Amino acid sequence: MKSIKSIYKIGHGPSSSHTVGPYRAAKLIAERYPEADSYEVILYGSLAFTGEGHGTKKAIKDGLPKSRVIFDTETTDIPHPNTMVFKAIKNGKELASHRIFSIGGGSIRIEGEKSEEDVDIYPQKNFTEILNTCKEKGIGLAEFAYEMEGPSLKPYLEEVWEAMQDSVRRGLESEGVLPGGLEVARKAKILYEERCYNESSDVTMNRIISAYAYAVSEENADEDIVVTAPTCGSCGVLPGLLYYMQYDRGFPKEEILDALAVAAVIGNVISTNASISGAECGCQAEIGSACSMAAGGLAALYGLNLDQIEYAAEIAMEHNLGLTCDPINGLVQIPCIERNAVASMRAISAVNLSQFLYTTRKISFDDVVATMYQTGKDMNEKYRETSHGGLAEIYKHKAL
Image 1 (tube, helix red, strand yellow):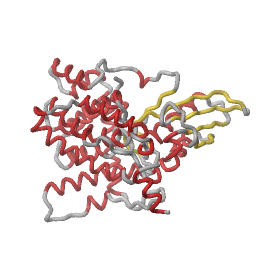
Image 2 (image 1 turned 120 degrees about the horizontal axis):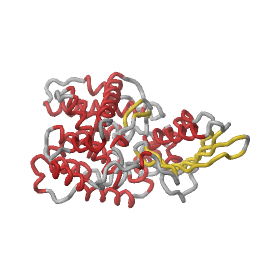
Image 3 (image 1 turned 120 degrees about the vertical axis):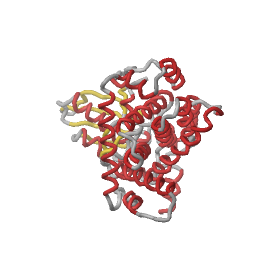
């Protein structure tokens, strides 16, 4: 498996696959071919269908200002749902052409090349092997990650946590309507500030966590800086929950960083053995993965044992199986923002169940990850981030 640093990438929203990945690809081409006087970029699959709404064209032109971006919605014979072709041109002649795939979570793969992200850090291939290693050594998942990654991991997690906190704080202070034409009003500040003195403590907790998740997701929809966790579309789940745990429940920063490490291990297992790309496996790969990461991280924060952590992550993923990715108008707003809040609360439920029922479980985390991947492959492409089905299609006809 690769470094868990690949799970957390700091960058502009609204979509890790559609903005962070293409932007990184554009910058790479700009660095390789600075002598080119122009560039041509052809987008295929999900990138072509949702590129305007997801801000792909803007992201590419930010990284490659002298580029012409073409949306090819006709070609279907492509190796990955997020396929791009970059051409560098000099004096009207093609200098070079590269086919690049945005493979989820802001990661990219250049056809025929091996990148730093392809270097294996972990000899373990799945969660079962990781747990066996931890049990043999008598260590927890966070300690395992620090041991495998070396001294650079904790400073990286500190940088990630700072960016996550910033996105919560900015989102709680912001008001107005999100861009894109849907006229979706920001709700985080309203959720956070609206006090109801006769509500139960559980209701208060759920509302505040939802406000934090909304805050991050709305910052993402506004194309501001967020952290993939594991994607931009699901970036509010984990920060919303951990922000609550530090600032409303009093958990120290060091333990929050450990929870981030555990969550990233879980996300890394999913990314390695399945997918975190909505275009490849639907929203189960994004919100489902984020919910699973949040559940595992929270279980570790509560000091639960390895089997309980695994069960929490498994429950969270299992009950997101089949979740479709059908963003209205290609925007990461409806149903995406609301789903982040719901997933944060679902992660808490998964932890509560795992704490008491882990000895009765029948399904391993690896089993549910394999099931998610198969489900995603079987899912009709119109439910995999193309805006051709589900809520997106119903809304389109309703608006006509």
